[in-house]
Amino acid sequence: MNIEPVQFEHIPVGEPLPFALVDKTGVLLARKGYVIPSRKELEETAERGGGLFIDTVHSAAHYRTYLEHLNKMLLQDKSLGEIAQTHIESLQANDRTLEKLEQLGWLDLQVMANNTLRESNSEFFRSRLEQMNQILQRHLRRNPDGALFALIYLSSTGLEYYSATHGMLVGCMCHLAARNVLGWSEDDCNLVMRVGLTMNVGMTVLQDRLALQTEPLSTVQKNAIAAHATVSADILERMGVPDADWLEAVRLHHQQAPGKLSERSRANRVARLIQRADMFGARLAPRASRHPLPPAQAMQATYYDENKQVDEAGAALIKAVGIYQPGSLVRLATGEIAVVIQRGANTTTPRVAVLVNKAGMPTAEPIVRDTAFNDFRITASIAHRDIKVQINLERILLLTATGAPMNLR
Image 1 (cartoon, rainbow, N blue to C red):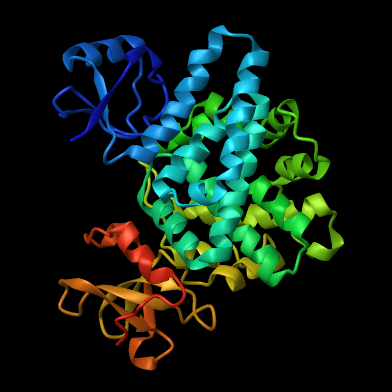
Image 2 (cartoon, rainbow, N blue to C red; image 1 turned 90 degrees about the vertical axis):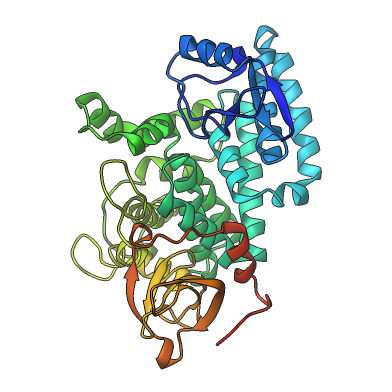
């Protein structure tokens, strides 16, 4: 194990750790995602471990991302002008290497999005947010099934970085629907991604906390949830977001207002699409206090509007990502359990990789099947909690790419 020391006074308190902390011998002290509640506990942990360290071999990308965050914190004793200039120069360099940033794993993008949503420096926030927008759009152009697989799988199975992952999923789903189904302009497709990423910036910390909370919501929490759309828009305005439609769409993204998209303003059209995808993502994600819905059920709930009529925005989302989306689990007519890896010719016939055979045993290698064939048709959607097989995200992601070699049967 290759470890590097981290000064304990620079570890964030009260928010999820971006990666695990270990002692000087590599023994785990605090798992990734653990929230250190107080400075006192942090000091005790550091003392117990003879210091705090990070495994830079297995978490190199996390470490780079986190060092960037630490550098910002270390500059707090300088003037705001100096801090802003440092961030701007750093981000300009990153823009020139966007292709390298695209190679970051999805776990690393979770950390990057999480840090962006918690950023307090306005220039750094806007620059990093646009980086996230461009990186996600690159993924959607290069391998949309892979992007959907990663985000739906992470949303369905994990509690950490809930707010950031949810925002990325909503932004990507809406971008695909806007571009491929609704035929929106490039500007509108950019707008819908930005709104998806930032719609909950006013309650990022609360969202992450609620994902782990088992007790009922307090009155304060209920009030914060009710006000978060307005608070998010106000924060974006203070951060210098210049687009009035962006701000208005964030303010309206929880509004329940059925009706045709063509009869709405630009901001209202975007808000409605976001609202339907937001509803899907919320039903999909687990909480410490409740089980998530299987993705197919979560998606079907977005298809009908508040008047029980087919919703135009919801229907566009289903056409874009399918009823059985990449990253979701299904049962086949063969009795096998598989994970969806690619969308099919229609919304109900994706390509899948078998994880559990008809005897109930895990497969040694994923077996790819096309559910358009009647023998392999899908008979049910399954929640991730209902199977015990551990999915290797990076390994399965290789199967999502167009032209990837397939063990097809």
